[in-house]
Image (tube, one colour):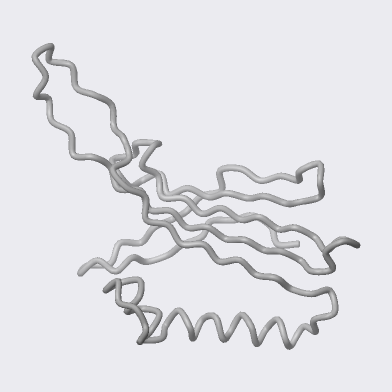
Length: 144
């Protein structure tokens, strides 16, 4: 079992920003699932509703489902641009304008060999780096 630690990722800004996702919670659920979460609390002026987040869920294989299920989520909320334009002078609190998110779900059969899982992970790295994947995420282009 891996110990929970910071996850450090760079973004794609013209001058890349290093995002340090710090552990925010982890635990074991009654059904045997393991959960973990990380937050980058430096983004969006440190406003909690705007923290970038990573969540992980690990479900062990069971008799009725002989595969491990591993889910990773990455969320990068964008906050509304607010102005103090009300007659009362009250400025509303920050709120999420929209929530870009990516999710990776893995199904790993109990019978899968270590090398097969390593191959799957390495192929995923290549897929994420591929032109087709990038075009779909960055340019919102479909594959034709």
